[in-house]
Image (cartoon, rainbow, N blue to C red):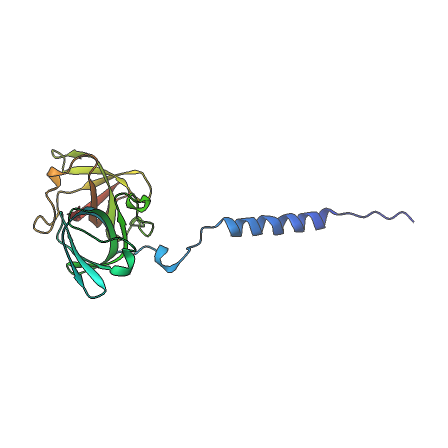
Length: 196
């Protein structure tokens, strides 16, 4: 009796299983609940101009912008926040205050980027943070390098709330700013408010 054994279906099935398992592990998954986009989240840098201890948190004001930041003392670790310190603070905006969930000092690696910051998805409203690349006052635009993607983003500043925003025409290349707004189109983000 001449018996022929074929392994083709077994090889195909195991190859498919291997392919599906590698695709499942390659798909990005959030590491924690904080890694999802939040429209009310801001990440900003600045120099501390005022600081007071209030119970188990610090009440901090930075040199630019109009927010008061409440930073839990436990986040400061073995340091103190002092007037003159340069810090990055990330947190949730509530009116004119920010409840901080991230703080980094200028001499720490976390100062450059907030790990919880996510870019504003197309079709959404929220806070975008980045470094100014250039300013075009004549056309009413500034260009930033987005903290999340590292890509340049054109910001339309012609309709900003001038009473609650910094003077965008005084920003310079290298300044870090946060912009509240929405996508005008896929290439331009329309600002309603700008903070340092």
